[in-house]
Length: 275
Image (cartoon, rainbow, N blue to C red; front, side, top):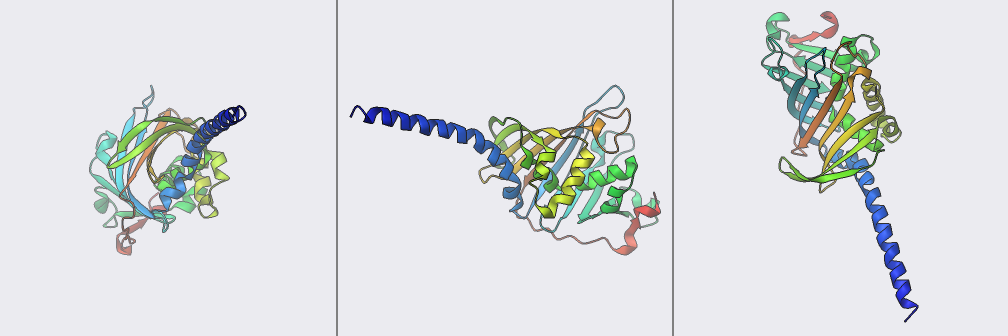
């Protein structure tokens, strides 16, 4: 019996110690697995918010939109409230269609300006190869509107993971975590099918490590994700522009049907014809 007690104590110590070690590791594994768990749903609705912090040279802004996205087909739709920009003359709703590597955008009043061809067509692959703030900014905006690019970044969780607490995101109970992701590290784990898009995302962000908050539901899916970028290092950065930007997405209504088509050719203006 004297030998049994120390053996039991030792076993308990090993068990507790192992559980604590796995607990710290499981948080990293949970976040790293969130992209696959989320994308397995196939589609979702989303809310996107871009917040830039004011500096002495530039005012801050809070720009948002809502839509839906099919992760497998790489198609999605977003509607933005231009009034949220807080800029003179900016009002009404802007629409965006993302169909693979092609983006269409429609702005209030564009029909009169563009001679009844209000949809402007952008080739994101071509824009990514061009130099200049406008082309690089449009390419970055198009790629950033695909939530899967942000999700893939979670494969690079590298900093300590802090559990902030239990919080509700829309109708879902979630656990809120705070960490840092290494975008380049994540690139080594991104599936081949998403690698090219993700690499562009990293190149345009201009940074390697990004402070990140993520809210994960009981199925391991990302419900909310925020990432803070240093805009001074981003592709197409403007001198004297805002220094930092927070990009946030909320994902909900998983499995929603997404049926989108290209605008009629008679309503489309190619970006190359007007730039």
